[in-house]
Every structure is written in structure tokens, then in C-alpha cells.
Image (cartoon, rainbow, N blue to C red; front, side, top):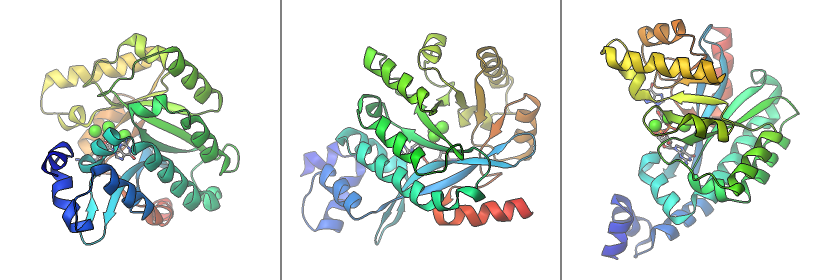
Length: 279
Ligand code: C2E
Ligand code: CA
Ligand code: CA
Ligand code: CA
């Protein structure tokens, strides 16, 4: 049990006994949580930098653990990735989002962006394509744009299989964004091979706007790179009007951050969207 607790990180030790009253593997804990529908989608608005209008949202997973409240993804996603449960957990998340939003497709912004975070393991999952197809098929054609956010922290090994998968995703209209961009090692080559549609500038760059000139130069360079490659840019972690104005002046197209809205339970998203439109 101790070994398991250590292997599973800080969690398993604490939560095993509490939840189940007896030792369980991290995989069993997550599997039961999934069966009990404890993983929930939170949505955070993504806005057009020019006018602040909502163009869509990123879906962020939360674990609603009875008696413990909401658990942040940093605490369980790594375990979900190690145990392979991230695949069914993401599938379930996509289904939940589709079932809540699809009946209200007409109220969404045009070609509403809906972004999901995917892990490296997804790129070797034969079901991912079908899951994306199902997600899109739940909405009237053309009402939503499905984005997959692939983190630059764990670059996937390009193989013939991944090339094929990304071609197939592209063919059904799925867009790919590189998340946390600027802190990893994605090369130009890599961006071209995966036909990347957008780069999400890592929050650490946004945080330092106005604070130091080196990161301002880095930010300018990222923007030039994106323009040259004809790739959309999203800046995340925008908290202040000064950051927003700086990014807007650089022609970063989309912004995301607490300044515009925090991640919210999916049921609150449509009311918040209406309120924003009428404000
Ligand atoms: P991420 O994909 O980089 O998501 C952005 C994180 O920044 C989110 O944290 C969001 O709540 C937070 N954030 C947004 N705006 C601001 C801001 O203005 N200021 C600050 N300080 N933070 C802001 P969250 O929700 O805790 O998620 C953390 C990470 O967990 C995500 O980082 C992503 O890598 C991972 N994650 C979340 N949901 C999923 C999922 O469904 N699947 C996978 N594979 N990973 C997920
Ligand atoms: Ca993300
Ligand atoms: Ca990110
Ligand atoms: Ca991040």
C-alpha cells in the first residue's frame, strides 16, 4: 500500500482510506470516480482580442469528490495519464459538454471554439478520431469548431500513425493548438508536421509583460513566428487590462484569462454568455 501511495503521488495515500476505507490502487480510485460521474467540465471563455466578444471556451476538468470539494486537475491528471484512464475520462468529458451545449447550439457564438486538453497517449488512441466525430455530429453542422490542445511539455513522437491520425482529424475539421507554447521544445518542423492551427502562449510570458524586457522580446518573437507560419495565437493567463492592451497591440488574436472570466461549471456558461452579450 505504501508503495502504491508513493507511486500515485500525494493523493492515493490520503484519499484511498477516506474514500474506500481500504487500500486501492490509483487506477481503481479513478475508475470508480469515473463510474460515479465525478469528473466535471468547467468552461473558461476565450475572447476576441479586438472587441472582447466571447468566441468559445476551453474545457477544464474538475474532480468533484464528495466530502472533499473540487480537486484541481494538476493533482489527478498526471495519475490519469499514468494509468491510461485519461482516455475514457476525456471521452466522458466530451460527451458531457456535447450533451449540455448541443441543445443550445443556436445560442452559441458563430463557429464556437470548444477546446479540450489532450495528452500524448491520445495520439496513439484509435478511438480519438471517433470521439471527435461524435462530438461534432452532436451539433448542427458548422456551429462549433473542435480544438484539441496538445501541451508542448510532452511532445509526441511523430510516426506514420500519428501523421495519419492528424490528417484524419484535419479532414473532419478538428483544429490543433499547441498549449503552453514557448516553454518546451517544439521546432518549426514539428509545427508543420502536425499542421498546427494555433499556439497558446504560456501564461509565464503573459505574467511578465511590463516586468522585464527579455520576455517581452521573447513574446514579440513568438508573435512574429506565428505570423510567418500563418498560425493563430491565443494568450492565456491574461489578468490585467495592461496585459490585454499589450497583447492586442501585438495583434494576438484571442485572449483567455481571469480578466475575462474564470473557469465555471458548464451549467453557468450559457447564462454567463447571455449576460456578457447584454452588458
Ligand atoms: P492549461 O491547459 O494550461 O489550462 C490553463 C490553466 O490556467 C487552467 O488551470 C486555468 O484555470 C488557469 N487559468 C486560466 N486563466 C488564468 C488566469 O488569468 N490566471 C491564472 N493564474 N490562471 C489562469 P486548471 O484548470 O487548474 O488546469 C491546469 C492544467 O491541467 C491545464 O493547464 C491542463 O494542462 C490540465 N488539464 C485540465 N483539464 C484537463 C483535461 O481535461 N485533460 C488533460 N489532459 N489535462 C487537463
Ligand atoms: Ca489548455
Ligand atoms: Ca496552457
Ligand atoms: Ca499550463
